[in-house]
Image (cartoon, rainbow, N blue to C red):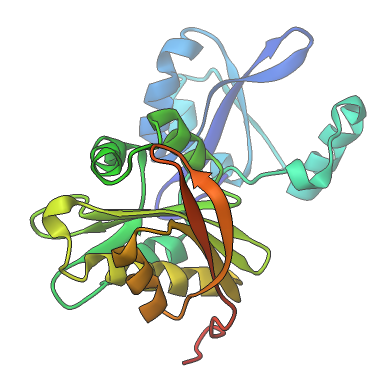
Length: 275
């Protein structure tokens, strides 16, 4: 499929066990790069290409496969093709809420959002990614007595429909602070917020949390909640300054040491563009 910018979305399929199964991909890239990645799989085989991207780059396909490429035209309507595949696989149907989009290139709006400056000191906030996890885990271990593990963070990165992770970067530190949240319906659930020890008491945590709340509002959140250790006065003051208040106490919620959790809520998140 034509991805604009001289790129295509593509996936290479092979006939296996009486059905077409992915062999390589899905991916996005320049046609020569994608074809080069498929070269070892295709070897001397012929291949059929379908999609508007195949039409746009037909000459490149033909040249690469030295006449072994067959272009299927006209391109079938995408919605109709999806419906035909679904009709043949009724037995594999699942509930609609399990359907998740697969993004092989992040949306332009999301990329632009991540480039926004968090504060005036050259700090920026970006979406957490796998290369950030080593530093994130170090900050996590330095901040909590019962820290999250790498598999826990990896699951959050994969759960893109609900989970959102953020890192704040400074000139000195690739990851100065991080935050993970859920956005479910109109609620923001703040799961984890931690600041590198060297960056504490510099406003880093507040800058990151303000960004996260603003981003959640753009995703439809109208209220927010979190839990915090009763003894964590520093965190409690930060949340109170940002409009959170204690709504309840969860007894013996934390371990190592055992301690009550304060449940904080904020019910007045402004609408997008509001004050």
